[in-house]
Length: 374
Image 1 (cartoon, rainbow, N blue to C red):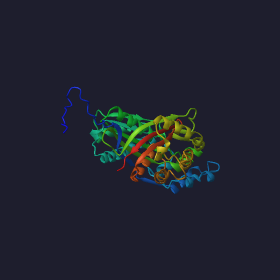
Image 2: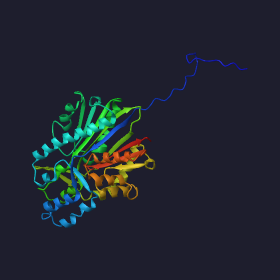
Image 3: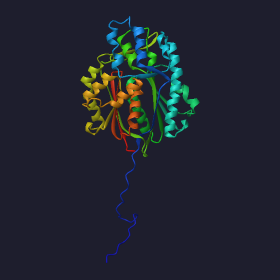
Image 4: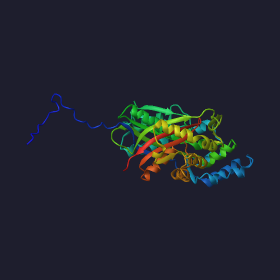
């Protein structure tokens, strides 16, 4: 009989026991919430507004007005009742509305996100606020956080100018901040009041398209770098800025406020350039396109979605969730992609997703995200 001898790990010359690999500290999405203001704008109401305001001032208005039927939008939500927009407004009036209603929407969406994560305001260490549809200092977050019970030492990171790319860019920034300080809680808020740029004092083709597409909304996400799983894990993010493309998308400014810049060349630009930069972005993220289970895109408009589907060989109607968000809310700029993410998660999706959004610059932002099975 062979005698078995128990050996202590402390014995001289003993081989070390295999240790369990440490759990990875990754940025996790703990909660996601969305909110819209109370005023509903049906598409036929917006079309009547455009006909009244622009019909006699823009040549070929009847042809241009077809965008109201082709935009894929049935309704949107605005911070003001729609008759407010029928009068020309000054920049101070628009700013006052941005502050008042922006604060209300900020508080609503943040409370929903905190409740979803079972957290108190005092648990949050950093607040990232993304907004490009109004300008105020102090910012919206500074006006709201103290009354909500956030700590006086909460770090604030306000970001302006990302436009429609702000949902993906903001989520990427929040994830980087969370990864840099594991265990801290980062709150991301994207809030846009696009309706404040409805301009009856102007008469451009871009203003007609803006009236057919844009609405108001907000989204909030809570992230923390931790070993425990959350609703999803952020794997990485990257972006690209095309040179000499400043005139494709953005804002102009004048005495009355912000005016939309939206080039009709946008879908063609995407068709020519999107795939090459998407492939380079996936290389940087070490993501194989074949391993992507779902693209989650900012729905800038139906032609933009068509162009992305074609460029990535996704097949027609692959971005059906994006189209459903467009139908129900319009283009809300930066929060919109997070509305799409929320609706995708509600379907029970699990797997590897890539979020994509296009914004002023002209720029593209991408984020790799893993959703675990429930």
